[in-house]
Length: 451
Image 1: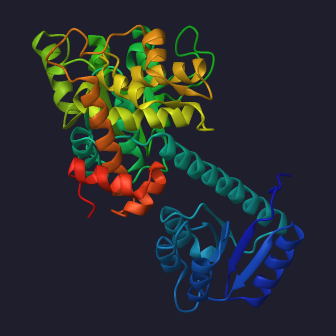
Image 2: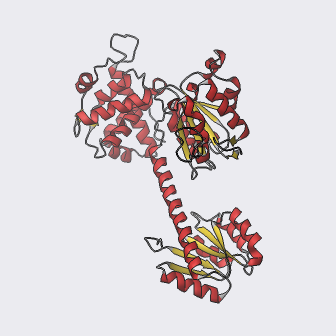
Image 3: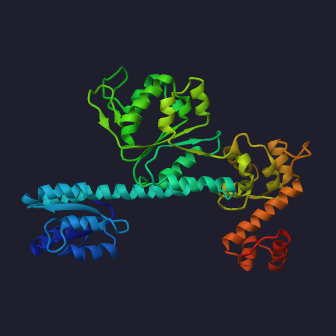
């Protein structure tokens, strides 16, 4: 029999003293920590002030009912899972409780072995939910969009506006700009953030397997189908599916996808009945879909179905002010010790390089530097030698000079630090490791505001 590896905290809610006593004794013998309540009102107070892994809830209670308790429990931060205990006459109500979020119900009288099995099963589910939340938090940390440029601030505002809705989103932009990152942010800021997030690389699916990969198949549906496979849309049921590089889909696959997007129904290969899925759809493309439609390479009806709301991710060329911040973030990722640094001249040089590969290219450059020059300061001549790349101003009299780039970087760094320290010059000087008097002079020279 499965046992919870760490003692779980269980709240038992029942107005029968004998039930509280017997359930409590049984679960304590199983190694759990048990708290009891004789009313839903008392149980809500305890749930709001203490952490519980599971609630055993009687439906028929004096005062507030078990159903009302379930509704009120949703307001509790990180509410525990609920296992309903009901009498024969309460079964329809117990089913309503399951619809309100209870994980299951047991019918009274409950045999000891059945109670233990039900509790263990629910605790397994609770452990899985905790793991899911931890994974979402880790994803949230990895998926921060770095930058303070006007272009990025505008895009982030748009993401925050559309994320809480159920609208289908199309993300456009060049390769390497971070379209998948934007899709992840939309997912994380939505009400579906604790549900599945399934990513599909459309060009990576062979045309012959497209239908099976997205919609699933049963064993024996075709040669090579050796076991049942649910398909990506079924995996994303209740959550979000991200269709990356949708512009590369063959015409036949576009038609199959359109049917699912219009009806919300998937037809598993080998089965006659269809399954309805509740899935939010986010698409991305580095190609101009309007041009593909005009050329007859992309279905117009599919384009309008996925392009309800379009977000364009700016290229790095349009957000060069973010290069110092991005470089600093990548340095921290590839060398958490903080001993690998960029000299001001090297950083200014990076701001002038061409970036056809966008943010991905900058990230790769920093990773390479952290390998070649670990635990020291990377100088300008190191970059010239390692990258063999000519910045935009060399041989281009109209481009920004190195001195101007350094000054621009200095201004951005001081302004960002003042923003973080809420205009406190002493604190900003400490963060920047410079004298307060020197920083005050520099702030005046640059015409920066401290309020």
